[in-house]
Image (cartoon, rainbow, N blue to C red; front, top):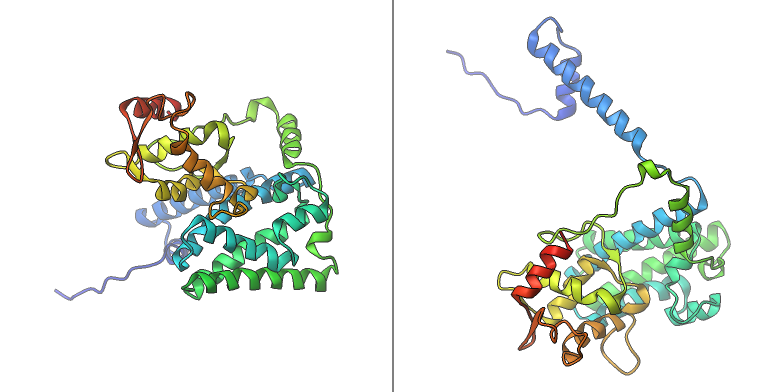
Length: 317
């Protein structure tokens, strides 16, 4: 019996073969039917994708994209050697410095924003798009060049930020800091929500306790941080985690405002990491989750209790 050579074909090659074969043969007819159905499904899916049109929609869409890609950027920075909260604050600060030629506090002052304002939440779509480009291109360079060493990572973020600035000055002749600050993006979100037909609004989902949230969500750090700390503990085999690991993992579940990533004056912690540490240092407060029995204070970190696991199962169900 003559040997027959097997070939592994790509999906597109299979499609071309089916479309150019004899439809009278059952396998060919089946394949043509399959590809016709899949093509129609994709067409319908493409039609269902909402394309941002208004300024409000563009702002909300771009802001969400930046939140998601900032997480990817932080992951690339971590692979390059940026580890501590202070190092991350410096790393992100270098991007701002390169693009705006000033630090975050100076940007707020220049734009006339309150000291507590999240700058990204007060940007128009043009400025958000420029920052989205900065974030994605920095991540791309860190990964493509296999950058190693925190100092090199700092330099890459600064250089990309500066290149985005130079491009804006060359194309539009407007520096990013000269683009006007606008109303808080929460107002745009309210208008979009109010304009959406009630029949097609999607219900708000809570993250599953057995997997991290696909899109980190904004929360009130002072009120709800402990809940997500418990969620992270619940994912560990023994329910225990060090304080430093907890600081590093919680941002996989929540959106940490940019101003909370700034290093506190005279300290090595950022506002966010200090809030996480306060979960332990404030354990004697009656409102603290350790005092209330949801977690235990162990050497170097925390351990979730049965009461804490019950809370996670209920709250994040």
